[in-house]
Image (cartoon, rainbow over all chains, first blue to last red):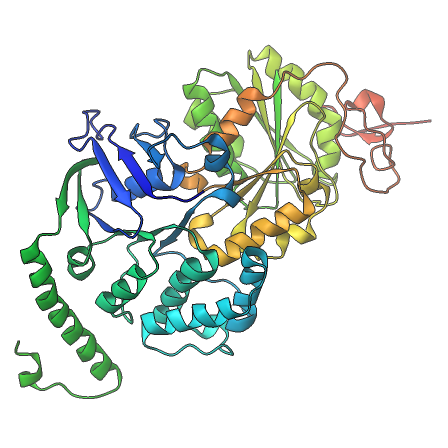
Length: 257
Length: 233
């Protein structure tokens, strides 16, 4: 089944009031952020998406595919589930060389097509900037490399049309570049995030409060311009981090924006 | 009475799955009783009693195999649950012996496997997986999509007809399908029999007698209440 849109129909807040936002539509290729303070219901919202809630979760939301209720067969059969989710806790447990590991996944997912392994590795390397080798062992990967490979594997080999990323922003990924590359894959990418770069490079953001979708803000033209400036600050911080990591000293003039 | 038997390796998440299931079943006005079978230590019965206020019981199996004890006492256990006014009996087994399966014909058999146990785990399991009606993969939030999918493919290989569910039981995610399966499960009627033939051995259970109830067996036995005793010629 081709998934063109996902519709989230509002349910109720933590206190049982109807959600201010009644309907949100996600289209193929959309990059969406979910923002809000801790405990505001961000994770609950992506749980609902992941489960294709049909009024049966505490929020009473309903999630539709292409405008229709999702068949129980798809909701309950993990093999047919079109969603990959990566959280801050998600990791690899295998101690295999990267190549063998990806081959194992490709074998059960896409009839083991070899070019997918290279494609996955290329994407991971574009995302992280710290080169991963096919011969690296999974357990030797750094935090940034692991994160990049998790995403690349879900995008290329897993090939699910919807990817949920729950607070995965961290060191070692150039976010704006990652977002640009990932957009090319025409997925629906949903970020739960506190990161201004990711938020401002999204098409729109859902603002959560007290368990409810409070409002939806489409990224304005002004914000898009601001995003470029924010990106500069973010990249400056990343470069500083790299310098400090490699034992260099920092001069004042480098950090005056 | 509906009979749900839940098995799986230690600390795979059986209790979390059953707690989630129990909460949802109670919300839907089912009456639940809970029986825990373990070798030497268990506090799950107290947890269920405290959290849900339902009738609970535990049985320590000591030197006997937990699945063996399961066969001997399950008939008594159903009677106990009946007396307590329950309409669903949840049995949580220690699940130490992977060659056996404690599932009963006409009941619902659930195996709980944690995806963090390694991608090859399903291939190492026998009847405890292949005879289950539902296989619940737990701790899915901790592991990559790739390992999850390889794990799931392993389950499908060992048990092509089992209903595979992915759950984060601590947060109650992915549990609803299991609740529906329990609600659709028929009442257990007639003579109770194990689904699978037990492994080779020397006692009447181990040599393959499938009848449930200590009255049907010889050797070292026990009832739900009381100590081990010997019956034979």
